[in-house]
Amino acid sequence: MVTNPQRRIALIDAAIDVLARDGARGLTFRAVDTEAGVPKGTASNYFANRDDLLRQAAERIHLRVAVGADDATETDPKALLARFMHLLLHRIADDRAGWLALLELRLEATRRPELRATLTTTLRDNLHTNIEGRRQGGLPGDDLTTMLLYYAMTGLILEHLTLPEVLADVDLDGLVTDFVERALPRT
Image (cartoon, rainbow, N blue to C red; front, side):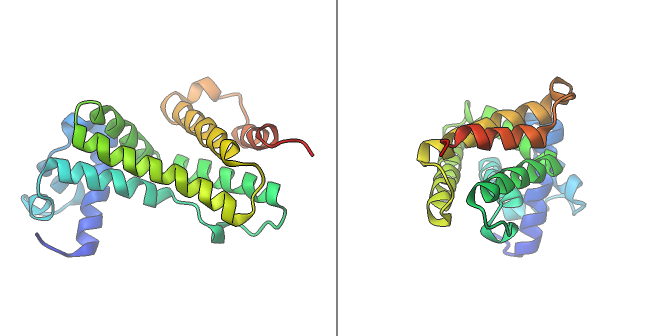
């Protein structure tokens, strides 16, 4: 396999764009080559097969929207938690193709056990990273609070990116703030 890391990432990002636009059935090496603007056959030199490409796309999507401790400067733990949630919403909304590609990968995982295993691991690790990040960051709430916020955000993002008119009259940032307020125990 060829090992130009920048080219590999560009091809994976092109695959994500193809998934978002054309769905899993439209994801071919030729479509990825075209999307990336590289010569025919390039993608097949970087990925063992289509399953390898799907797996690497699944892993890459979360890296594109990751929110880390250095992304916010708030000192109040509740405000910091709310800030992380707002950043996540906006990063994902700004990378609509990545989220839509993830939805396509989720559907494809219902038919492909190897992809299901990859996505299960990736999403489980992502959830555990969020739980551990809350613990280490001294953010308020407990593990259940983190799970509730994680799945509330997942549903909100799904609705916002697939059927935005449903929430057209809703202040999404205000809703995220309400998620945090209501998920945390009152003190």
